[in-house]
Image 1 (cartoon, rainbow, N blue to C red):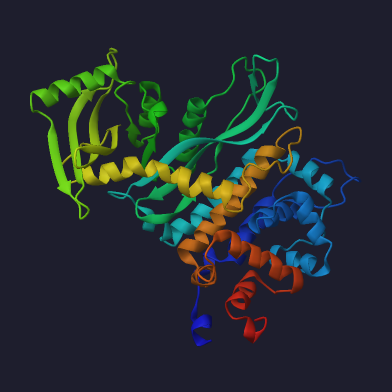
Image 2 (cartoon, helix red, strand yellow; image 1 turned 90 degrees about the vertical axis):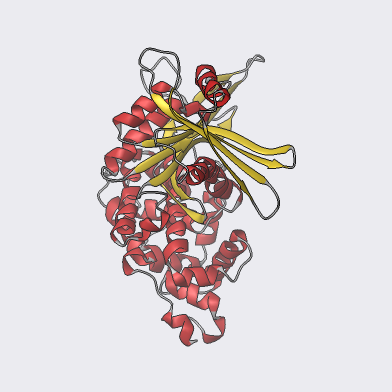
Length: 439
């Protein structure tokens, strides 16, 4: 028992502190609903949505059904400071009207204590820089439900598919499972635009947004071959960001021709390492090669990485970077290039398949509802990642369960039958139920 109560977290990163950041931000939102018809405060609506995402409820209706139980209602009051539980229709209407840019500010609110307490430094990739992969993901698709922000795809059979997509950005570090998300950028149709939005344009917007909210952060952007084109690299330079971007020979014919000629003249640099499994890791690179054949093309640094098992190629990929490649940093650069998959594995896969119900239609609305609900979902994921990095009590409780789903299922079941004065009290009870509910 003594060991349990010696467990602690940084006070500024505790559940109570982060939950208060959400409350403080939401209380600043302008309520545009008609006076006299407002039955539930905007604060209670937003905190209810956040609580639903935090405890990974599968739907708003299921969440509302559970809240009819007195114990569940009391836990929402003690943990999330919710005074009155909104009905699902009124909750959706309230959240639908909040400009998404207001909710996005919560991500910066969460970053500040992470940086102040030096916890973010755990994820530094190289030379004080943070590695940030970009990738697009779809979270809603329907042939019937749509709003003015939906992307549209017309099919030959006359049907139209409506969808919502975002470009996500997260801080990752090879060897560390946890990732820290930024506010995503919606890929959406905008009033007055005759062209559909696309991932690359959303990518340009999100790097500008990241630089605006984190003006001093040293950043390396990584991404797939979609991003290794001159216009996007120009945007990275404008925003003072380095890059490690996939560059396939089929997409960069002139670049690869230069590299091939350097290789034939033996002017490339190479490194070979054998691992304990007998595989050969082959690195080859050349600095200062034109990205393409245009007049104003940048010179970039190109590198390849191949894993051989005997004579068989097990893996091969190639990248461009603005970082000068040396024998001392080539292995780390390859790790950075390969780490772009962490946004797919640690973020999207977790959000889709580990209880966050990313692709579930929690509600569509007429204005901002679909994207706002996604933001609260990402924010709950952000909070959980902070706990996994810094909260020893949370970590000890989580270690009792083999899967993330089992863990959150247990938490949801427990708050249905018992009332807790705080989230920390709930965790302590899960760890050691024999001693009752801690104060």
